[in-house]
Image (cartoon, rainbow over all chains, first blue to last red; front, side, top):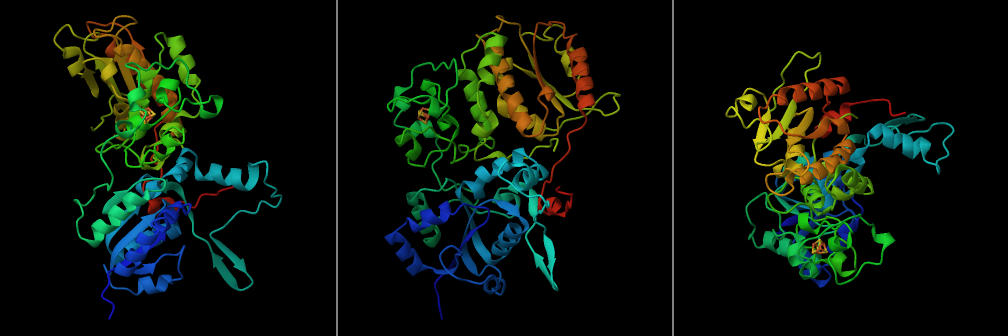
Length: 320
Length: 152
Ligand code: SF4
């Protein structure tokens, strides 16, 4: 009889980058594969959902779930894996906060359908063919999952035990998380398996920050050649480092790209986007109202910038 | 935070108001402020973080009003300017989340008696009542997927 603990790796609304980072464990992946019995990993191996359904409750030791919940199939699989698993790890920014797919929450589902299937300049759809959840073909009824009005982070749908953010999470944190589970050395449930400090604290450019940053005009990366040694904010480029959890290895900063916030808010903060807005407001140099209006109006897509990875984690009432 | 509605408008908007203690209603103790619902005195309008504004909307507010000191008269240095910049930015952010920007406003003025607070709140409630209530959008996936609206 196989005594190895069972593990599942599953994707919901995801791009596949999280699977890639697991593959990037390289040789370490082989020892993981020795230590556990992988019962589900659609991107790498062939398994049937029915074999998961027939398992006993909590039979799987660990389910690593990445991607956000966007449609009814995602919801069904998330609930199934929750039922069958002792521990669920929300893996990657989409599972933790909705990720970039969560930006869709700035639009209604109807807007998105109309754009994608009718109004986009590249669409030719004279018959108005739209995807349906049910279609009759001869005697058969074909079914598709239903797209939800909103994108949801995983913990809005099921209980999540641990979080590992990142787009994708870096291999060192993945390896730490997997060995912590295998060795039973996990922190309290609900913890995020990444450092607590903000990115600026670990950023190699932090030293270069002037005592006071003043931004008379927000610039965009394609408009300037960024100085490789200098804090991006001090160059008028939006960098989410002050409001983002560290742990990524500063990979973007090292290739001269400002932080986009994929690690989500720092420990203890729910709404990292709002925290960044507060920080940014203080840096914009504008005393009078006209000047403040001019500077703020010059920022391209402020909401998308501040909430690039976390829009879906914000539950607000609103007009649809 | 729980947010209460007041007043006789057809749709009764719930408004949260942050007032700077230095400029607004500091005479007569704080009576002018205490009698009003959802008015939160702060030590400087610059203390109002963008996340407090979001928190008010998340807690059910239909609008948020910030009252700070006039230009050049911040008790500290320039907290009122900081608040104004935050409001300008947050008006763009809430719009993206489906909340009209007019539901967030800032007034920089001086009102030691606190007599202008109530009329300002009433004026904003009236403007918001014309915008209508904010509606909850699909809170859980289950609710969302039962909404069989026509997507065309
Ligand atoms: S703002 Fe960005 S570039 Fe500047 S120190 Fe923080 S993370 Fe580094």
